Length: 310
Length: 249
Ligand SMILES: Cc1cc2nc3c(=O)[nH]c(=O)nc-3n(C[C@H](O)[C@H](O)[C@H](O)COP(=O)(O)OP(=O)(O)OC[C@H]3O[C@@H](n4cnc5c(N)ncnc54)[C@H](O)[C@@H]3O)c2cc1C
Image (cartoon, rainbow over all chains, first blue to last red; front, side, top):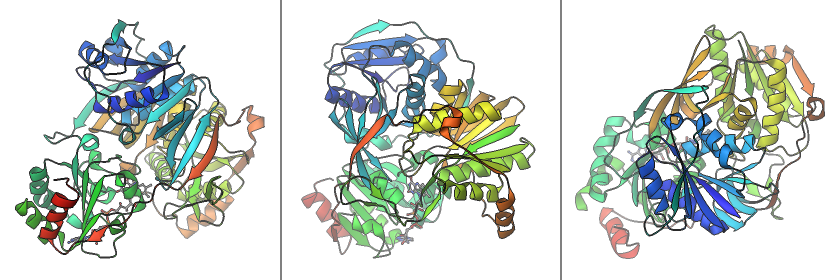
């Protein structure tokens, strides 16, 4: 049995989600290989080789992967897929785009967003916004899986001794091409890897107020900043702040929900946080039913007090 | 150009589903069913492209039980021109749906297929990408902006770090994210009109597609319940709890 992990990286380094996927592969058992498809990506491949549990890194280094286009990435995976029992990708925007394409090209089913490895054929995954957990068994010869990062610890990123092997790079498919990117710049920890998250909802009222009220608190706690869908839809913050069923899944040590009502779609993205604090003026807001500590009050008074007192 | 929009009938997003006592699944008897919200966004986008003159016809298609006809009528009330039901009682998994849709694409020859990025029941997020693979077409997932120009579509995608814009050679697959548009409400006259629009019915066997599930659900359980905690009186009490009880700051 051998597992192939599709690495998410920026050519120079591995994205942290890759480490959680490697842990899931280790839990399945058998060899763990990592595919790095990039351009001038030997640094990312070297980083993957250092991860504990990885025995081999396949490096596909060439121009077709400069922009991490899905069509080329999937073709690259398929080119090396024979011989693997499991192909795993992170349940991130990148992994979710590539993995189903790989699965269909191989005529295999995919199990999305696994949160537990029961055995080599059987996995647990959330359905209905996490309101139920399904245990699913696959009868396919190759299991294609995406992995929910919050459900698996990150593998240690040093101490490993995998070998890096260069492989032939696929040709550019010509089906899609990169035009531009607008990446949110932030000095803060990445949302899905942060220990503390300060998250704001519609109750903040505007983007200016979101920043004015929440930034001092997030600064004091060295926290990442998140948001509800309502706050993103209203344009307070960019889309990549969204936490929830259809946004990012997070599980920090501390999640502070400010002016967020606690719709099931939001809870789906944060209810596995270790400690949840809710600040809301409505004592009946559903968010209080999952909060370890609830503070009923006007966020415009309470949050500055909290930031000042820390 | 013709646009094909697959739509799925799912438990309404406002319903909190219950796990069946025998752990065989969730109880969906007598709950409100609606069009998957992401599919609604897909229909709306296709209709807007037709209204702008970038497309000539919008065809909605759904795979599943007979009641999916309601979902298709709803799609036509939003503005789809006609609809196709692929009728089956078999539990359909994403790969099977992608194969059924490929058969429809082969027949209808659309220039663009717009799907929702995920269905809010199984939360799989697979069908669009699988269909793209089976057709050998390019794909743009998680779209928040779509522009069609001749033989290309320029699509802005919601990715983990922000936004990315790519250009796709048509025909291609696009999957929708929440910010792409706000679907219109179907007006009463449009609901009436939709009842008269063409709705064809085919069976998977007629399309030559084997829809046998590859995955078996062994059990469905309640997730571990999170206990609601306490309400604290003020900021000082909150800080005390976080420092001394939870020890997270
Ligand atoms: C298909 C679909 C997918 C979705 N996906 C997601 C998702 O991924 N993530 C997500 O978050 N949502 C998602 N939603 C939306 C979700 O259903 C809710 O609409 C959304 O989470 C509500 O955001 P909110 O809590 O910020 O706003 P509201 O529900 O309007 O709540 C605002 C809260 O702020 C409080 N408040 C107002 N003023 C103050 C004040 N001065 N002081 C203190 N408290 C105050 C109010 O009491 C209220 O509880 C999705 C919906 C659909 C249909």
